[in-house]
Image (cartoon, rainbow, N blue to C red; front, top):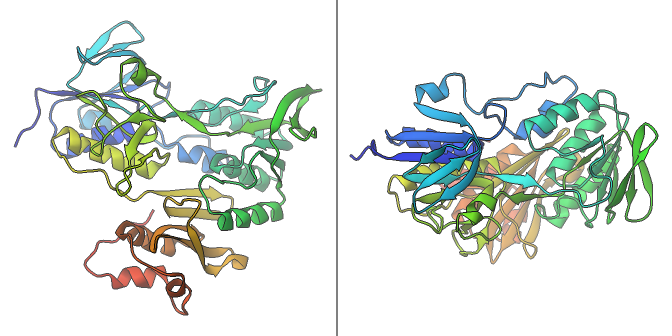
Length: 419
């Protein structure tokens, strides 16, 4: 068996996807040199807790590492604190910020995404925060200790996770969302409406169809002027208005870019010897072939594993079922699959009790399932969505139906591990 000892892999990005590529390469038997470029000042850490447990009142403000102590030395993986400034794909070389260059046999872009800027006057004032990195989170954690009033711009996952956490601290929380419903890109209207009622009931002032026009210095604090002309006083402002894939380096190197670095079904980029994984990768859907880009730990991890196999010659297509989660206060949202606007929603469970799932049917098949405080439904749904199982509204609505029982009845097919 070829061990690739004379080859080298250079990975740009030390997030979930990049670390997973390196880890999986060693697990698959790759014995060549592996180098990961880390452009942050911190050792690789998990991002999801930054908007959840990390900001809680009892948090010690210490990040969770992506791998344990000694991992990189034990696996003979070089973690290099450096920023890539240019890539020469013909020479297969990457120039670093310090002026040196590294050669590679295989190059992996795991550059992730960056927050979109808040496009309004006053977005650069002290007290206005974004949340993406550990540095952001530490600054926000410190500011929360003295805040009383918080304004959140954007009702996506990050905004609502933070809003719920701030509300649990007893703070006054206002959320401004220019769209007609929260988490509109990720959730069905049925689930989105439930979250609106739940967060409002918990005391969050959720203002829909209302964006931000400007942020003003107001005495010792701030005030956020909305698109209706209303001003909301705040001790701190957090904005989360989406992200953009970090593709500048790849584009300058001549790689094809279209809402991400364009890759084929094996996660290979448009230039030989180059791959892209995670938030920065635009890949073809396993069924439709339509291009998609996903921002989730699951996608980053699974693509990292697949890219490692691809580098070692595996020609199989990436075909994992996406799944996501969000913890908003006491609410645990889990999603299997990706919904589309025309999907037919079918309710299972009791929204009034705060425990239910919504099946989303497309062309007679189960396309996605949104589960609220229903982990058993979610675990089963990941299996069922992966199968593209044919289901009808009547079948799901029938007395005694459960995703868990249906998944269990499909013997001989491995079930996903719990999230």
